[in-house]
Image (cartoon, rainbow over all chains, first blue to last red; front, side):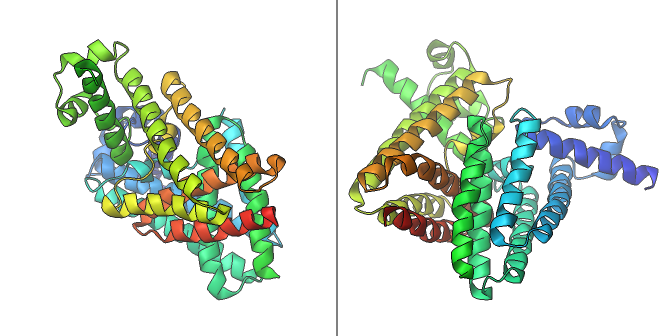
Length: 192
Length: 192
């Protein structure tokens, strides 16, 4: 990676981590620069549009990284139930390791985004659409009928996001474990 | 209501509405005072602890208000499926009426709350616990075994929160409709 690209990637990673733990509005540009350990000038060099542009890119980068993780976990599972358990397990691990401070890197920003931050709103929705399509494709490969895989992916992603939220707030991974058990049953029925 | 109480209630309502649309960190005290139409001095008179104290009280007030709404909708439903559809319907209506700007009044703040805002974190978790207990009680009354009602309430609340989040981000009520259909099936099976 060239030096410029590396600086950019470090800013995106630092921003995504801070958004994940405390959200978009609470995170100042100074904090991102400090966390990334890059010179202040890099910010407007790489992101002339300022904070919203940097945030949209950070959400997209975190979304793409997590798409890789989700893709791997889904590919390794040979039933929908196993796939769902693997996803719940991934997020439960992240929450536990971070003392329940790091949930989904997109959801806080997605909820904060408004009509005043259209670029950010679009980036979050784009990440969710990409994850939905990833889950749908894998569910189809695992034997769910095409007409049912899309709607089921929506229920799954919503349930995962909500379970991460509850687990973070209540500081227990129980909602994630619960969700995986209940939703797997639904998937197994669709397959039957 | 006495004048002082009315001023306090107006500040809480304004704060909750702003948090619901844009989150805690993005909302300035000046904006809350302006939206509530109260004199600036009321703020520290009613909330000497400042923004976090006001926010914790706003989350609790919104949580109690919504507990009333949820309670009514649940009481009017005579099956778990009808109860879940009624809840999905309530939030879908809120989202549609607000142009997808108003989701759950607690979730954005719950995701933003950190170890730096312990009072806020506690208020959000308290609201979720109260809602869980409300749903659990109603599920038991509707014929779900006591041992299953608690876990099922967790799956329900997580799925509802996540579906609101996705519906808000993707600007469609489809995730809520979907979730209600899929999760009702689970509840009906528990009853069978």
